[in-house]
Length: 68
Image (tube, rainbow, N blue to C red; front, side):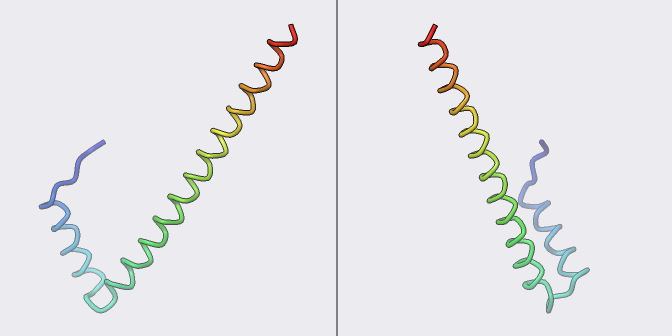
């Protein structure tokens, strides 16, 4: 995955301010932040569900092995 340095980040911010405008820039940044937060929470929830499903599957296989 490509790395973004400080100089590239600064160029992106300056371009965003020029394109969006300095008045609306903070609003857009807040919205992007809330979207990122939602996506992170969805990903965490999916990871927890997968982890719980694998835990349940391993417990069931352990029970089957003990019965045999």
